[in-house]
Amino acid sequence: MPKLITIFSAPKPFTNPHINVIQRNAIQSWIHLGEVVEVFLIGEEDGLAEVTQQYGIAHLPAVKRNEQGTPLVSSIFTLARQASNAPLLGYVNGDILLLPDLIQAARFLIHSTNRFLLISQRWDLEVKELLDFSKGWEERLSVVVKQRGRLHPPAGSDLFVFRREDFVDIPDFTIGRAGWDNWMIYHACQSGLSVIDGTPSITVIHQDHDYSHLPGGRPHYDLEESEQNLNLAGGMRAMYYILDSHYQLKNGKLVRPPLTTLRLLRKIELALLPPEDRRRGWRWWLARRFRRARRFRMG
Image (cartoon, rainbow, N blue to C red; front, side):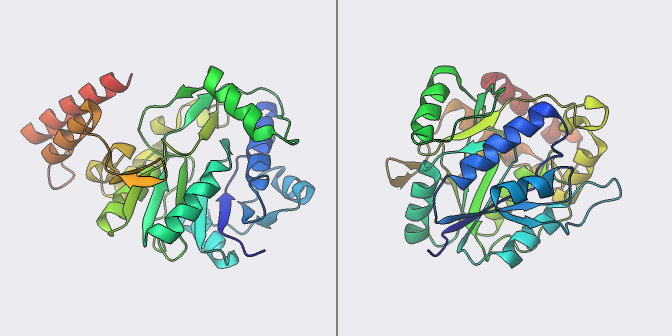
């Protein structure tokens, strides 16, 4: 059967017991999306080769890295594109569970929209054990998310779906660090793609974890590589969010997102940012205050 979408990811090492569990859960959810999906795992992290062999999925090990040994987003996307013949590519973080509603959305968008970037808010969920992917898994997981899931604020995105001819030239961002996901949304807006917020129609589930896998156990936004990502992106003006999307996918239609307080605060913040990445002056001072107000509203 021809493939509709290639789901690809660059997982963390499988050495941490909890990371091992949630990444295996994520990968199995992608595999169980159906025959129109192929899955590529990229990198040479510990345990990755064994996992791809166990699940019978493609392994693309030859990823380029920065001086610290962190895989580069540009290389990850290039490897996936070169190995895929599917019309759609979908990058997803290695701890994200997906449901078949993503495939429904992809089918709709590929027939209704020329160039697009599909993103979504995620649902945060505590998962400590391997999930059961026997028949009816998607219904069981949906019930759990409704009962215990927490909708994450509309910040970055853990999922990016787009036509394979787009996002060919990506700066050498480091994966797993802050900023590159915001640039993806910014670049789509600047390149004439329709940025589509799929939150009303697709269920993207993030399995909670700590930051023990990162240097010093610090959150990714505290790392030097995140500052490097920000500089490569072009500064704060390139830090776009789900709030900057053009449309929402809702009830099988593309609709303009409602002008909520969060979106209004974001529009004002964006208008106030200096034309160059100057983190000083009255415009920067005001923009920061609208940004703080937006973050306060998001909780």
